[in-house]
Length: 55
Image (cartoon, rainbow, N blue to C red; front, side):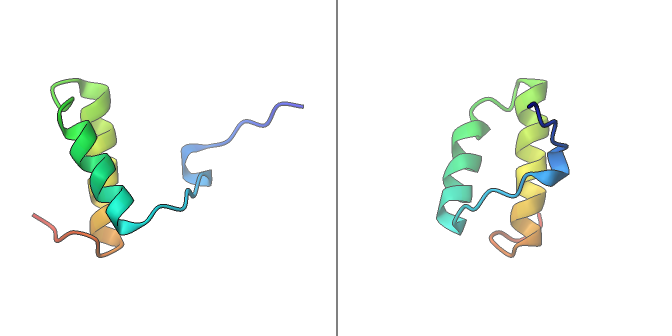
């Protein structure tokens, strides 16, 4: 049985520290459009959760 999930359906549990580490790690790949889009989405989520301030 195959379940197709939408991006909004996924709700991983990560700590604020984990999220900051992920953002830091993918920052090195910001020249790549796909990683830049991911970084931007995670950055937005970090602001929403109060992990970082909006810039």
